[in-house]
Amino acid sequence: MQNQDLATHNLLQRWGLNNATVYRNPSVPLIYQLSMLQADGSSTRPDSINSTGALVAYSGKKCGRVPKDKRIIKDQGTEKDVWWGDVNIALSPESYGEVEKIALEYLGSRERLFIIDGYAGWDVNHRLRIRVFCTRPYHALFMKNMLIRPTEEELKKDFNGDVDFYIFNAGPQIIEKPIEGVTSEGCVAVNLTERKMVILGTQYAGEMKKGVFGVTHYLFPKQGVLTLHSSANEGENGDVTLLFGLSGTGKTTLSADPKRNLIGDDEHAWSDHGIFNIEGGCYAKCVDLSKEKEPEIFNAVKFGAVLENIEYLSNETREVDFSNISITENTRVSYPLEFIPGAKFPAQGGHPKNIFFLTCDAYGVLPPVSMLTPEQAMYHFISGYTAKVAGTEVGVKEPQATFSACFGEAFLALHPTLYANMLAEKIKKHDTKVWLINTGWSGGKYGVGQRMSLKYTRAIIDLIHNGELKNAEFENFPIFNFRIPKAAKNIPSEILNPRNTWKNPDEFDKQLLELAQKFQVNFKKYEDKATIEVISAGPKL
Ligand SMILES: Nc1ncnc2c1ncn2[C@@H]1O[C@H](COP(=O)(O)OP(=O)(O)O)[C@@H](O)[C@H]1O
Ligand SMILES: C=C(OP(=O)(O)O)C(=O)O
Ligand SMILES: [Mn+2]
Image: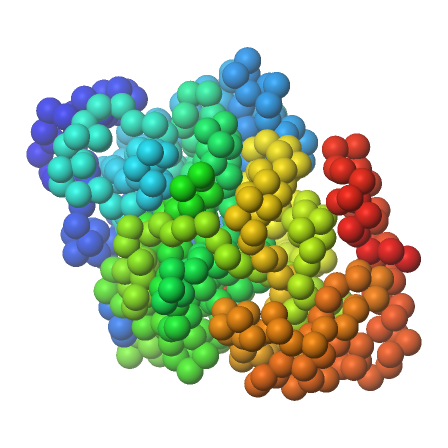
């Protein structure tokens, strides 16, 4: 839309913007065409189109999120309830004003500006209206994919004036002057009170979608709705499964299951009426993506999808080399939910029957599957033991064992125990079964053993879904006191107890003990807020 209508003009004036050329909710082909002009000032490699029709773009220096540059504005509205610390680093309203000014000046001075309007949350009672301002065509397409696309009618009804949350993405612009509380040339500043966020100094698209997720973590629990860093799908009989996990643990991969209908791959919420997806699209990792192993995701790489930071096998054919991670291990593809066959619309479901905690155990000592008691579920949800895989956060080069509360500590706006207590109440009320699934190392730690076979993880999940695993014969897994199956169809029995997969069982015992100690040290910070039942559900030395 090159000639501004009055409504668009007013939206711009509201923020002191008066760009001559503004594209408000442009079509996919138009975004493609504009991305080929490369006049967005991003100074990265040019955008292109791959052999299957996806838009290929590069994010420049930053290819993962930058948690160290994230700030939450501390004001009267937020100072009492936000969980301040390393995750939520405080920034003053004055400093926020300065970063916002830099962002708006950048956005306003560009030749072209994009506005993308969309919802966050499929439940109409809880959805937020989001408006994104950006200058890179690929960022516009990314958010068009990742937000829930409004109908023409909804656009007229809900997006004509102010909305619930604004994103000012001025990623190509760096911060060149000192600002109190800002410690690098980049800043991702979230103003929860005034419902807006600024991005400077990073062009990684994931920062926008996880920004929205963080806002829902602040707003939804106040309405009794629990936010979940999980994927979700639904079986033929309407049974819902949630798969929690930190980045790279398998939420996206395992939720795309041909036997089940996809609800969403990353961000959900659980209300008194069931679960709903927060997003309109998926954002899958591409490293080693293959048609054989992950056909649904592989086939989603087509016209309308955005490929981020990939290399070609050949510049001539524009076939993607998914094994090439020379730019980053965190290569990505974003596509609308409907690109996955059988995705469910509206993307909502009932109360979950099963929950999987996906953990990528870099030590190779946790079993591929363990059945948890409700108390163990709480203990392990608060602990959030897993590994940070390479790439998703800037600076992480190999799997790094970590405890990430609620399997998504980076996105928690409030104290972890608040989310954990809400989860405890819901799984009790709805009799949800919780399983811990190790998608990480087997047969030795990272560097010695190998990643758990995707085939076996899928087989385990199938047996839980068809009810067979529940009836297997179980044994106790020591120290952690998990119930683990002794045998299961389609899975070699020796892998079910990880001790059998290690060459040297003594080394295994030592590593298991070490991990248990790490759990205990980590849990100390939650002990004053957890019940005695939950504390005693942890590993025992
Ligand atoms: N056993 C396994 N289970 C799940 N994913 C696995 C497994 N082994 C290897 N992988 C790979 O790990 C990555 C998981 O990434 P993804 O599903 O995008 O994680 P998330 O959505 O949780 O960030 C994929 O590249 C997948 O191919
Ligand atoms: C996009 C991200 O999430 P995930 O890897 O969980 O999909 C991210 O953490 O930047
Ligand atoms: Mn994912």
